[in-house]
Image (cartoon, rainbow, N blue to C red; front, side, top):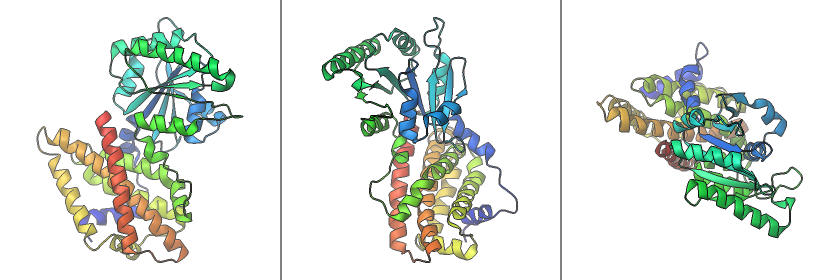
Length: 368
């Protein structure tokens, strides 16, 4: 077995519990972030609920202060893959958004301006937006006009047009918007909201990729997807620095495979692990190990290695970890059922997952 996967196997069933806290901290420091800017009661928590399917009560209890004027909600609370930033105190004259901007600048991010359609008095939000524009550093915005059913269609259209004009006048450019009704009794526009937010924060596409008609295997994977994304994000973040990824990436992938196997009631051993690798193709392990070693060596090249080399390594480690997690779910599902799975199915699924993971990881890297 090649050295990389020898390390992975060692991490799958370690003699002692692997502590991934240090390597995951870097990922959690740069979580993809949605900055929600709006008055109290505008519907910010309802947007979080629409994206996460968590209850409003759970969301309300899950916020933690992070700056003098903001609080954040991490999803999921354990092993988070996405952060929501909610600005408090917009009505305070001394509100300074610089801390909030600093928090977002090092993450891939988007600012979501949330307005109730029937409220044209938005001076607090507009004043905050002016300060954000003056400081700079924020590029990706979306306006969400909520509670569109609180008045007639004609009044709603007029009010939305007015509020949108106010925002675009401050920002001095056109901004995408979406009109929704997020009340629990009559939710409308959720799919449009998800599509619009995914456009400004591509990372969400891999989280929200639920299919209407899925097999039992795909349904099982969907339940484990956020966990796999957390491991993928941790692997990518830890691989940004020379030498660190050499140890952390196989350890993270091994820990992920161990956790996934527990979900399916399967225990890894050398035989099942070799069978799993074999289903990915006879040369998979060799090619994967060789490419990983080359990426790690490139990171030691002065200047280039610390910039382009590290960024590339991070993207590929994140994407490949996601892809391995995806095919592991398929293998473990059929293994638990005593059903065969072909090399053709596994290699096809791995390539699809790798392509998807690479696209998302690269988009996020480019936005930072």
